[in-house]
Image (cartoon, rainbow, N blue to C red):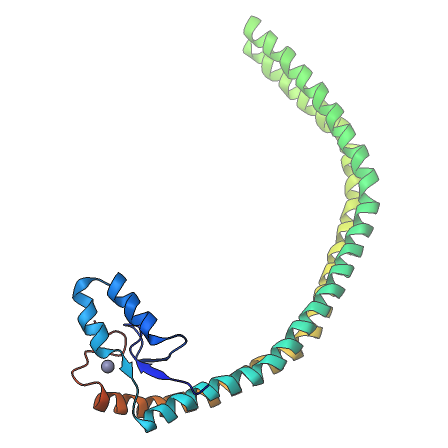
Length: 237
Ligand SMILES: [Zn+2]
């Protein structure tokens, strides 16, 4: 179907392609728009007659279609590269986590059990110290706390040490694996991304060139056809 263009189907558009019967739009304006807007809206909403303007509008439309046709395959290639690299990355991350978890998990269990036990002893000592404090003197209270802290530190120190000895290298291996996976991902995606953005930039440039020159023509023809139009580039109001 031959495209039909109108001036000001909406108050914030210079021109538009009619996508449905214009009578529907006119009815809608009459029924829903504020009373004081209706006259102006209906006066300005009219068929574009200038062949030059219509040709320029069509040029913009086909430039947009060309743009989308150029972009679509580049976007597809980019999305595919990202998805593939993502999958590789996920696998590497899962594996790194598995290695880390297996080396740390057992020890972690022992460590947390030791901590829990020491905590219990500590809490008990503090509870007792509080009893002493409220019953007799402050010093005994603080002495008891100091002692409880000392006992806590001493009882947890060996498991803390053992824990650190395993966890620190395991963590190192884990973060190295993650870094490596990220590097692989970036290397896979970067060149495709570059092509993608270059394609977009180039297509955009070609598109903009057509839009700018066509819009000049449309604006000139609009001045001739749309007499006494308050259009300011953004709105008719
Ligand atoms: Zn106008």
